[in-house]
Image 1 (cartoon, helix red, strand yellow):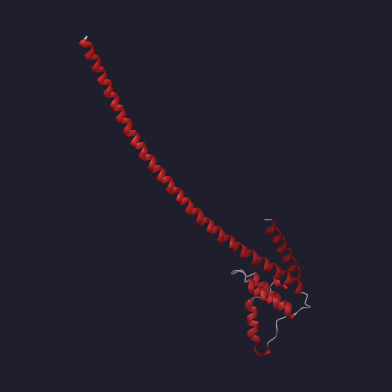
Image 2 (cartoon, one colour):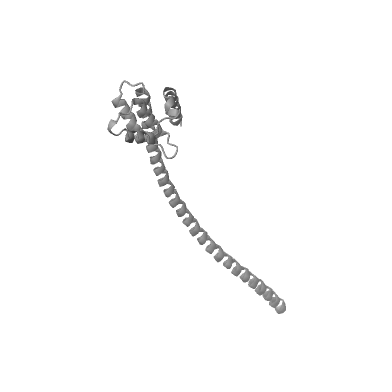
Amino acid sequence: MLIHAKTMIYLIIVAMVLAGCSPKAIIGGTTDHQLESQDKSSGIFHRELSDQDLFDAALSDLSNDKKEPNYSEARVRLENLVAQFPGSKWVAAARALMTSLDRISALQLQLKRERQNAQGENVKLLKENESLRDNVRQVEDKYSTEIIRLQQENEQLKKDIQQLKKLEIQLEKREKMLR
């Protein structure tokens, strides 16, 4: 839990640093669609993307409202920024963001493993639960047949006692008559 809190604090600090460094990326930054249209429209006069364009593109990969963030594409763009513009003011933020992306990837991998482990445990517990239910059913069946048998035996014993009482009464009557 402490690791998650530290990670969240780190991500918030990185986001604040990035927000302070690039107001264009947050307010009307370029999107993938705009970058593609720029690349297509430039044709023969193809221009390389600037350091800020690469950084903005990476941020747009991460803040995509329509679908899941594309972490791998953002990482590639940030690596290109660091490789192509080692003296840029965006390099420190790009490295910090790449570190955050690495941590996010590691956490996602850990979460995936934990989900698989939890699913395996869940299957195991379900099987164990079903086995215990079967055992309980068997014991209940065994005891219910035993109860039925004992009830029948009890009824038979009651009948036998009644017969013995009758016989005893008859025996007493005979003895009285014989005296």
